[in-house]
Length: 114
Length: 116
Image (cartoon, rainbow over all chains, first blue to last red):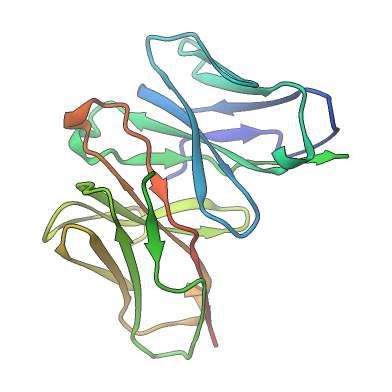
């Protein structure tokens, strides 16, 4: 079953603008991860935020986590055409043990127009 | 960098054929995963393996089996291919949570499989 739900499903912005994507999940988590997928390629890990963290930065990426609302957001600042891709959140639930089994959302498709 | 290699980018097979999808990783990861990705459905876990010869069913194992004879290789098998198995198949690997629970998954580029 899919735990993470991304919002919006699709987003189109101009180069230089910021892009914000949201993810909601249902059960308690160990961590939440964001991945990017370029068209026709595999997923690439972007950033991981632990359940006891509220905000994390990596370059132009900013991730927030609100465990009380079971939600996370990914902000891409000063977007570039190369940021055009699909973005997925994935959660590692409590009790996943050593398997590292993630549950992925359905993704947000971001188009950045030059 | 971790490299996960899937044997084919594109594959066309016929209904009823036995199909093998191969995945190899070069980072000595214990965990390996097979997903399928379909429009509107996201990524769905088919099977995963946390050690050689160990396997566990994911969310949609019906019609599939797997093999993990060596640590670096994880094979997905479609016993008798059907048209509803036309999809993008993604393989991933990761270290186990015993190395710290915050282990990302590393993906191959996928195999786009068409069953005619």
